[in-house]
Image (tube, rainbow, N blue to C red; front, side, top):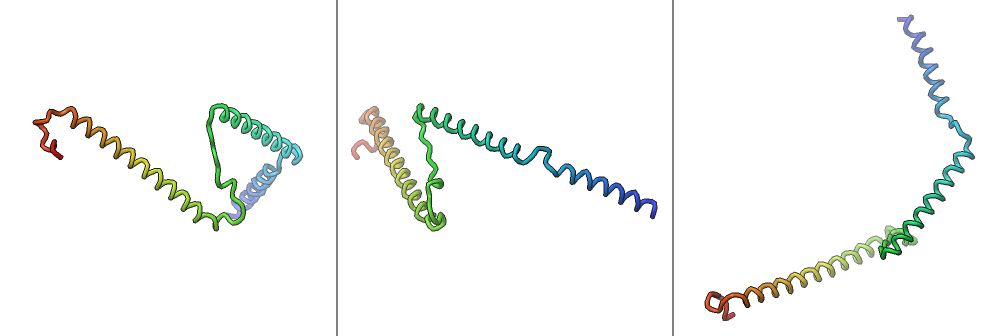
Length: 123
């Protein structure tokens, strides 16, 4: 048993040494920071480029959460109510449109039917 303890300690020490050597960055921090800055600038340029293309195509994007100031959680119920009202208005408009289309389709069918075959022609 004692023969296994010493090699295990040596192996653990060597493994720990390599582990901590790999944790240290190989490049200096200034180089890493400059690479990050360059990547951010490139991403910003790409974002502006894509936004310009989207503007040319007429695509509109919005992000309401980016515009909020102050306590976001205090404004959440207000935003939820606004969204609910917008959804209700859209649903009401969709129902009205569907009802009108159904009415028009029913009138067209009634117009195409001969007068003697319809049970509800008098209504």
